[in-house]
Length: 132
Ligand code: I3S
Image (cartoon, rainbow, N blue to C red; front, side, top):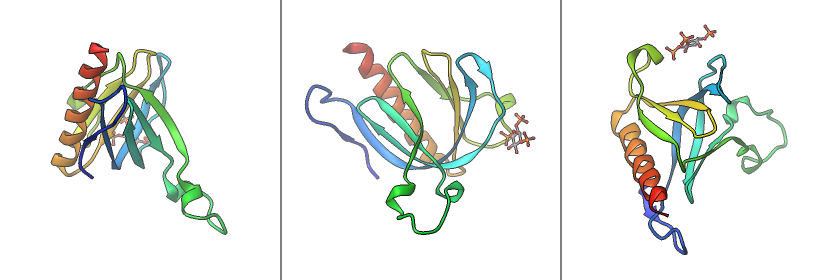
């Protein structure tokens, strides 16, 4: 999906959605065990939402739509994002996202252009939120 601007007050905030791999690594300042999973990831109104991996959802009668359940919600205002250093992961193309509340996430995708698009849109959003 391409990036586009939202309407209303946040006229310059970008929107984006796609599939990436993610794991939380720090929760409120406490290091936690990595648990990489694929995630439908949505940026909207300065909030990044990672959805649960549908593979981990129970099957059965549940509709596809009901499997789109948020797992983590990240407020980008005051967050920082950049390429993760090599010691953070053996994977390639890894971003590190740190929130103001002391949570940290790694975001990864093997196709570099996919992940560099996410880096750009998150950096632009964080910059835009600083101007509000
Ligand atoms: O940074 P770590 O602890 O080497 O991360 C690896 C582990 O989380 C590993 O799972 P176990 O906790 O069962 O050992 C994962 O399978 C790996 O993917 C993690 O490392 P990478 O380098 O893939 O981020």
